[in-house]
Image (tube, rainbow, N blue to C red; front, side):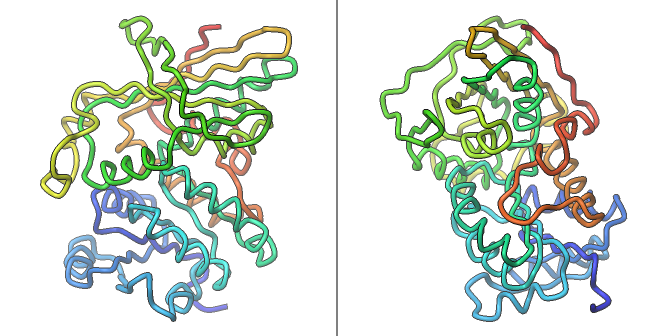
Amino acid sequence: MSSVLGRVLIYGATGYTGRMVALQAKAAGLDVVIAARDAGKLAALARELDLPSSAFPLDAASLAASLAGFHTVLNCAGPFARTAEPLMRACIEAGAHYLDITAEINVYRLAERLGPDAARSGVMLLPGVGWDVVPTDCLALQLSRRVAQPVLLRIALQVAGSMSRGSAVSAGEIVGAGLMARVNGALVPTPEAEPALFDFGNGDGEVVCAPLSFGDLVTAWHSTGIPDIAMFVNVTGTAFPSGELSELHDGPSQEERDAQRARAVVEVTGAGGEVARAVIETVNGYSYTPLAAVEAARRVLGGAHLAGFETPARVFGDDFAQGIAGTVVTHIA
């Protein structure tokens, strides 16, 4: 094998979250190369971070050649509806494991469909190694083991603080996918889904959460086997912006992130009515994602990978999320 065996390629490193991921990867001592489409921005970042770089578009016929020799590719370039498929297919061809940090459900469905092709090539497709979906995927698997015959899983995310420009675009992809739920193991449209009340354990009591389709509708099914799954979100402050997205700031400042911790509620119900419920609280999602994504990449480089479509909890264990600094789980039922 070439001398770049064991290297990770971070695509989309010039973006708001991608830059933080690149910084974290360097701090963690990974053998990393940063990549993006814009050669000018990438060259400036490479000089600033003192990291090797590779600029290439995702529509190039030789995309797989650009990934040759890399052990793992970590995609941070959104909207992932545009970047995930070419990178997944190129990873399968090049023999590189694929990771990303998306919340867009259709990317998980794509990875699920491409899973058999990836398995034949010995490649892992692992979307969702950031705040979506690491905390909820791990907690769902933990709670599924606390009740007999788990049949219903409900997950509610609390999105606080401002949103990055890239996340706002991805949020449009999530909304555009339509309302869905998993019913009897099948992912089905649920346009008439109603809001629900959840207590995030922050002193506000129960708050209204709207139904929305996140990647857990796919990952939690594979991680837990629970047949009925529903997703909800509670948005506070200015999390979902309005107006022209191109005019948004890159993302929240360090001070803003430090002031806004992230929370999610996971609730599992057994066939006999028994309920296991817990809140997982972490540092701000934008701060959590680089920590989790780089740790995931480090573990994959170290041999923690399975062929085909996979989930964080299945690959790294249901305690993976709690290994990220600042994460606390509180059991409330």
